[in-house]
Length: 323
DNA sequence: CAATCGTGGCC
DNA sequence: TGGCCAAGATT
Image (cartoon, rainbow, N blue to C red; front, side):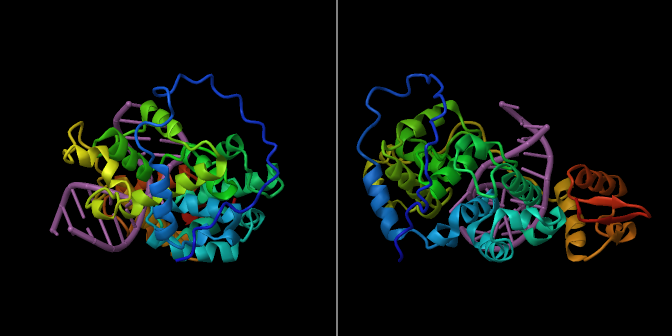
């Protein structure tokens, strides 16, 4: 296996650390609760990391950013082919920025949550206008882009620029919940306590912190998974609080599920699928065929228009947005 | 803070 | 078969 790439570009930093929020005294005193987790996890990562295209040096910050958008709630296996096509077609932010937003929605294909495509396009426009076409390395500037929240800003800054940020995604949250807190699952919504813990566990030096971020995430994705976790392959099984406690079942409030069948989301999905596959305006009648119930159908279409995913035209025609 | 927002694969 | 889950963001 190829060694997972190191953070590529040096990037003349000089970025003055944002005035640190006069933080609450995080966690006990030493920033190291219990035995060291970093070395085993990072060593494991060196041996077991997947060779994903966005981890290769040639991906650059734009590749990392595109992958992060696509990976928001969508599995790696489905992202791979779309990622490759996307980068081949729009190798730089400015290339995407020139396109109609509807082209981004079409190229997004069946990745789901198509608003992400619109936001990625919007981010490309903003990067072109405000940052000279280069993905910013500053966390606050990343956070200001459409579609980028706390997680994605930290991920891009860390993976693309090698910076030191807590990268708290669903994988890392689960790993920390188990290994450190001793429970099976993290809370439904990210809590301040989780952020404090992630911050406290961050290695001091930048390169190691960036490596830890990628490694702990990969551990959650490959070994410490939501369902059938593989403790026998886990590099920190011996120190895992949850395992040492006998792997008690989740108690707390039920983890909220996702319903889909019969929802507006399903209707929206069908409507957009028709528009994606059509290369030109689509008559209302064609859209009417995707769902029998007229009230819900109309509401779904209105929603898509309101979201900017669909553009109504004169004469009862609809198309993906040109502007 | 909770609801909303797609899609498909897996056990 | 169907609930659960997948590198979240936004309102």
